[in-house]
Image (cartoon, rainbow, N blue to C red; front, side, top):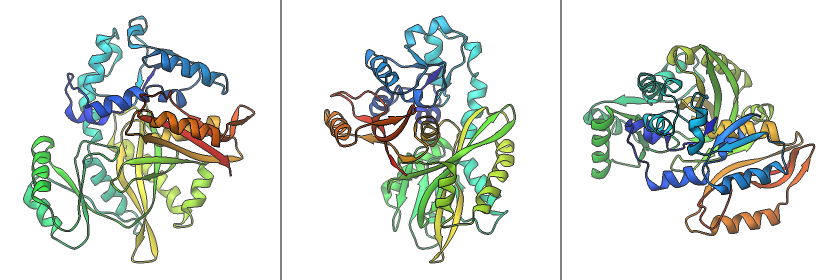
Length: 390
């Protein structure tokens, strides 16, 4: 059984069974509750509330081959020992599932969740980046973990150029403060709070990025398996904005216009070994975010470890959707869009369905627009795919 809980990073940072998500995170979770149907396999069950999600699934089954069912939290007591695969694990989700009737013995223990929290710290990305750079001079990047505000200030004044400060426990472009020029008093206060509450802060220079991408893995029983590449883009503030729907071959060809393919394949092999030593007891999906950066003007380098996402992520959703539902002659984009006003998402969906009608061949999308969650007047978060010929 699959469950989409996009507030996981916030809940894991808080690490209380009684954590309550902010309204914006709860709205995203509600609007996109059915998103996991696009990466769950046949025979799976999706946990999602509301008749709108059930009706949406019925409509999707009319156009695409999906063997997925849907249940609500009130039904979970009948499946108390079933395996739950959430977006990510945290104590508040564990409590919510137990309160809904799940057997605690079938869920991760609090000790296991503590290890997942440790694995999710950005300190691991700092360490892994240093290990990778020691292997290949073609790699670039710089990241530090500081536990004292004076060390942070010393780093910020060490050379010119913009910097970024990061909370150790946050993800998906959140928990970042961009330092342009000098640090402000407000930013110093933020930094002191993060050090007090989370033990330290990550500090990095801002690199001249030309392309975001990631390598996606799965760890099962002590074995690390490379799943796919992910070619994505983010906003200027670091927030996730969307994925390209492409084959791994096409992604490699795109990246090879900047860097030798051999370096990418060697990096995969290196990560398959290193990730197991970094996360020895973890079982599940894991993504390593990377960048192609300009280096000394016109050359390019690989920043091999910007973030490590020890959970499911949107790159894997996009990959699963592409592999299963997009025609081999087509490519496209996968996006999550936020609309500020009620009704805007519905208007956008209506227009896109008219402008880009769905064309399906052999149970796969050749072209067109497909909303990936139900959209109503109240919807503010919408996921969608837009497909066209390659």
